[in-house]
Length: 199
Image (cartoon, rainbow, N blue to C red; front, side, top):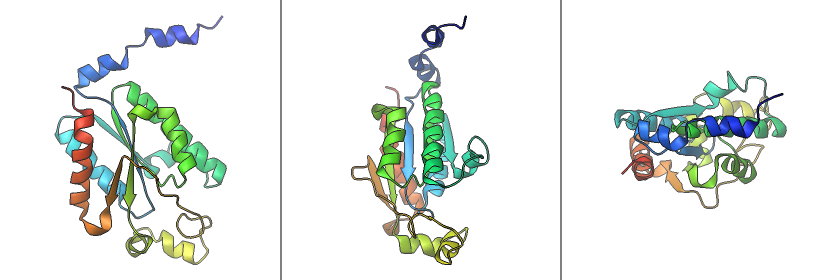
């Protein structure tokens, strides 16, 4: 007969003990914004700054998730939802291990981000809107995705033929059009720091 699942969870070390060991409060930092908005660059900068400040951090983005745990998913509405659901569940595992998790995903709808927030838990979920105008994202277009979408080579591309719903009340909004990547990273770091520091 299988063990009662609640008994198994009751035997795990509590999150508080792991946070105490790591000298930090775990949070899930969720960066949303258009492709090319600077999410991954800012997230990588934040990861480095936090690590240099002796915080233990895990960064999740499309490249390291879709090549592994989500490599069987496409870009249909159902697959996008499942992609975010799995990411949120993985983030929750990191959270319960006392680890600060930085997520950078387009996650284009309010509904899909609400799902992630519900899984992670409202108190531990910090929604950060990397607010970059579409024209600037298109100018950057490092991977040539917007160009392909404009030609019809990529269907349902967010910002072109699929909508992006901006967060209504994000915990932080970063406007990259008016500041450098370094300034944007610093702004996010200063916002996060008091929420993860132990007294």
